[in-house]
Image (tube, rainbow, N blue to C red; front, top):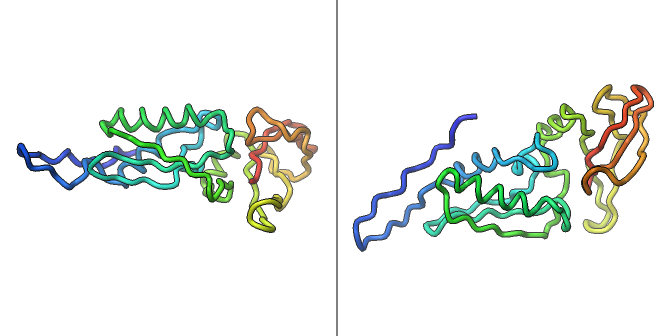
Length: 183
């Protein structure tokens, strides 16, 4: 991956503040795309859809995030990794703003991100249907085995290694696997 195009901090003569930020929002997005999710390390926080917005001004950078689940135990690690990842490139201060509305959905994940999940051995989430936008949520389609692509699979447990995954079994290749829950 190429190094983001960071602008040099503008020179300031004594007593004359500059109105130009030291970094561009595009450069921050590129750096954030290198911050990996600690629970699914093949996806960046950008690819996962956690990062919602980046605002750059003369006072620093604000990164707007939405957790995948309101009680996601990885959020403290993700927040730390975002701040330290940007600080490693000289971007400070970094403010984090957490927003919960609208709630995160797997529909925010790109097809490329879902393909990375499958290559990693985790079934990708299907599209979701929302009956009222808040309460009723259903997954469309069968869960496809990431190893043999069979749809002859069964859910063994709604509780996987993390809150965002469930455990499945493939009747065709006889492999157990995790599936990323569609929410």
